[in-house]
Picture 1 (cartoon, rainbow, N blue to C red):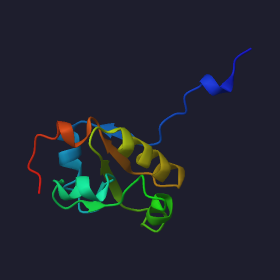
Picture 2: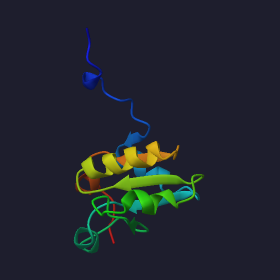
Picture 3: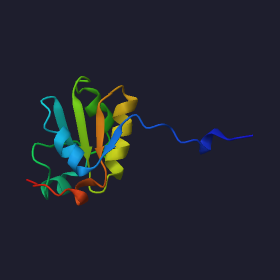
Length: 112
């Protein structure tokens, strides 16, 4: 007998390396979201990113109001929190959600 708790849920978002993330965020319908806390966001961000803290009590509520027809590019420091955030958005019906694998620590491009 197998236990369902050991099954991993299929991901409904895509992990991208820095190059693919950088290319994708140039799309006209791309929205870049930094899911780190405000202090981390202030210390350096990817140009054009908006800050929506995934650890904030109302993250799910804030993203629920976003248009579902956009492409979302999420990142954090290492890729873990943004992966969680991408999962939350995918569960809410967002179909074009991308996570920066390795986070901003692996970002070779310019930051603001």
